[in-house]
Length: 169
Image (cartoon, rainbow, N blue to C red; front, top):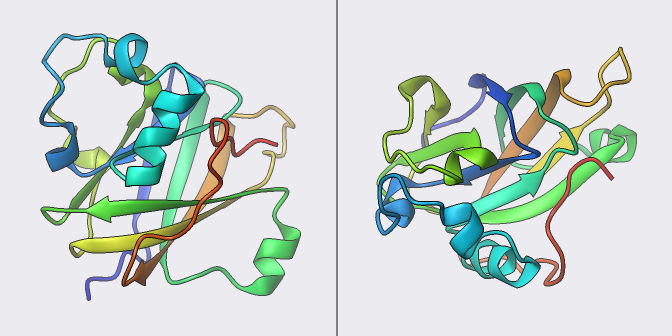
């Protein structure tokens, strides 16, 4: 299995969230379309994607600069206890790539994911555990670090079925 350990993506977002997906699961989105307004704005729409593990989004509570740090497996129990913000999601990887993008990219969709916003991951199902803390400044999105742990599973995990996943609460 290819390890995601040590990978890091610096992502500046204008929106209030981040999406993760394999390009295969976004092929149906027409270039230039407003997929956010049409299919990803209401809680039920977001949940459909979350429960399928296709276009997996989460709220950050703020636009800004985020450093996504990737790890294999689950975080330690100590890290889970310490993290002010934590969230569990699931994702399907197909085609060996996961893209990390601004939620607002869905407003005027461009299918090409910038290479610096992609990580190589073996195809399969992953349980994602996200851990973060407020930056030193106290302002969300001010160089905030988000640790994303990829744990390989045989079947898709059971996830919360209501609301829009938010990391900042």
